[in-house]
Length: 358
Image (cartoon, rainbow, N blue to C red; front, top):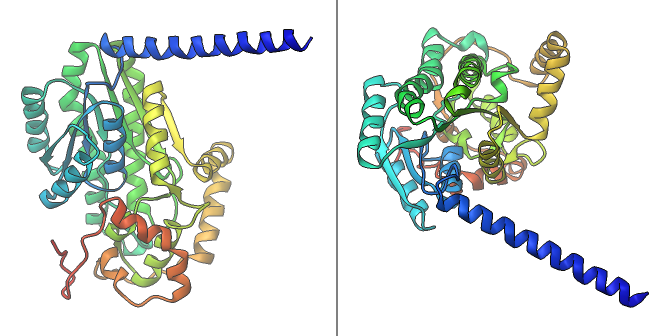
């Protein structure tokens, strides 16, 4: 009996090893035949110099893609590309303001001409303005839409004819759970993300027949370190504390490196929507079941926990507020968030006048 069991175990182990070997060989053959959606392909990451965009660029490079990252700031791009190349990634950079339509179109033409077809486009560029709706101006909404909606539209429409002609391509639109459930003190951000989500879902519905897959990514709060580059209005320090705290705490904020890996897997699968993080998934579910109740509950929590509104005044960057004195308890609670700032290429610091340092 023991002999039979031992023989059965040996045969099962052999079958498992054979299956694993066959799978690896199949995947390698797919890559060699050009069937892999990432290996050897060109992936363009808009807003790829820091935060989630930087981490997505790293993950695509690890998948064997050739990566191009675009962002406004040349010095941020230089730091990002140096970090990515130390891991062996094949990376090129382009300075580009996504709100400049002509520059975005020129960037796409340059890359297609010099680097080859763009097989993956990731629209990730974003800005966050935090504060009560009473402090928001028309310009705040225009700025949010210019970056997170029109920037997405410009890049997508520029790559689309090439992808349709080749009958192949992936478009990844990083929206937000704030593009499905609007939350207090982030109104201009959520308005732009709602527009982006609608655009992305419409693309998915129409482009499948051309072999172009569109994935909408809806992250919840993540520890990217991006709170230092957010803009704050109203009671600046109080707004910064709640936002930076929420962006740091385990259980509330998702580890950004894990998020990037999961997002790339979702893109590989060709998912239509990918909501990132358990809190975000729960919020999306509740909103789907009872949207009015969810909005009312969100408003009640906002009134109870968030700073009271005050007249509009100057806008301050998180990196300016980070320099101010904070309690030891607050510093302890935000340790992980502050570590993410340098790990994910977010912080340059500010001088005495509030200007960003090189």
